[in-house]
Length: 87
Image (cartoon, rainbow, N blue to C red; front, side, top):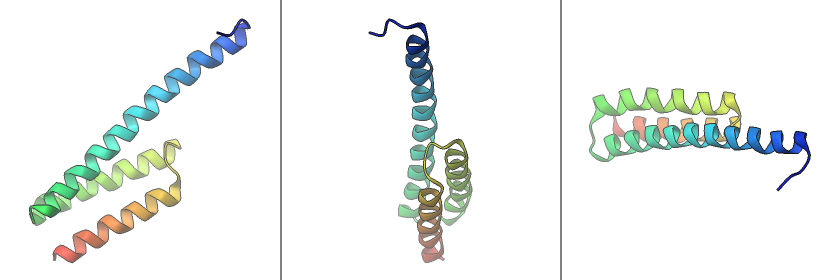
């Protein structure tokens, strides 16, 4: 355990940031999984709606620095390819 006041603060701050990042990443995974389920069920209408939600979640995670912007772009591209393959 840290003894210095600033070190104790850094521990508290990093724990808060870790929790926020975990929440954002979990929401992102849920949005992507929702899209994958819609594609697997070949439900085009639901897939389009969940695709926009997944893209929004990816952009938000990338803007907050939870994931890298190139990772977000790669995932969006792959999701779009799956959506287009349905049509």
